[in-house]
Image 1 (cartoon, rainbow, N blue to C red):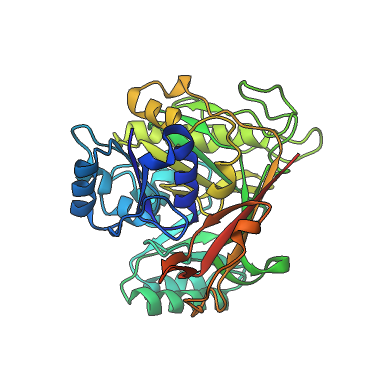
Image 2: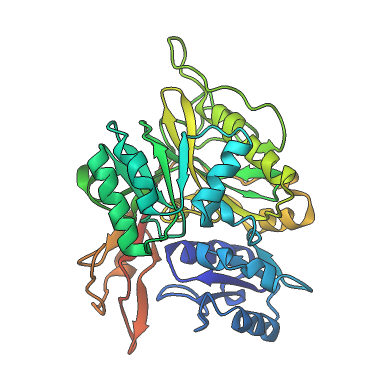
Amino acid sequence: MKIAVIGRGGREHALCWKLAQDVGAQNVFCLPGNGGTPNNRPIAESDFAGIRAFCESEGVELVVVGPEAPLAAGIVDELSGGRLRVFGPSRAAARLEASKTWSKQFMLRHGIATAVGAFFASPREAAAHVAAQPGGVVVKYSGLAAGKGVFVCRDADAGLDALREIETRHGADAPVVVEELLEGPEVSVMGITDGRSIQLLPPSRDHKRLLDGDAGPNTGGMGAFTPVPDVDDENVCFAPPRPCGVGLPAVASAKAGGQVGSPTTQGGGARPNRMAEIRKQIIAPTLAGLAADGMEYRGFLYFGVMLTAAGPKLLEYNARLGDPETEILLPALSGGLLQTILAAFDGTLEQAPLAIRPGALVDVVLAAGGYPGVIQSGVPITGIENADALVFHAGTEIRDGRLVVSGGRVLNVVAHGA
């Protein structure tokens, strides 16, 4: 089988690396790719006609979409058909990420544990509401913003500053969601779904601030690790292949339907089974909601969760894998990825678990000078071949025969330990 991976970042390099283990590197193409991905083709992520023509000429049977923009633009709807399978949600289902307004309304409509929120047609329309929240709010631009559209505001003045920033970046008519300010550690939960059931990857946590000590500006993500102590303990055991309490958690399969429970209180006694709460209060009602709304969703699904004192709360969906989390989650697989992806098409997802190897993984992102602002592009990169670690490329390209910096987040250095 020949596979085309759409995208140019570290996530896409990790996908190419993993899928090559199933079909061989010669059968994996990356469009447009970066300095580390195999068999690159200079076809833009938005060039659906070009992607289709390439797949037809090369006999590609599976397209795996990495980034959110082509999903939101309807790449799955445009390319699916005949022998070509496109792994990702439909344009309608991709609104889970593409529209914070639509996504929040979906959460509320289907009883998913989340923060209280309000919707506004513009930053100016939201100003009075934000000014009346002295304890702080979270302000979100409703559209896609490359991971930079969410502002955590500790007081009303910061909230008003966030609204002005959204107006500057996205215009006076930019829709806005304003939510209550939740407190607690965050966890990323991702899986492969056919819209009715899901096979989960291990929980992970990323770090978004630029500097040590959770300081500096927000970025697309400066690193990630798994397992997550808040979630992965001896109470978390869902399925084979391993017994409880050994390395990474066994993979879960959550069925659509079931009861949506109330958040578990954090009183005395044993620590709550956080992953069981997430499955019950967030994942199961999400799958039930997709089914109830008739949404076609066959792809990766990301749940951004905050572990609050009142139980887990869903912060956001992503209609694709997170980055940099992908760079640790795919190396965490002891078996293949392709079998589970194909099972999502064939109606056999429940019989295709993801095998997880024991141990911990960490990813440290190397960023270009100036990131997340104006970067120093074109700087030569050397020494990767000497790294005693797995290295995934992101903002790199081959220029005049040399590997150079081409983006803000340049490399992902990944290590595995017992």
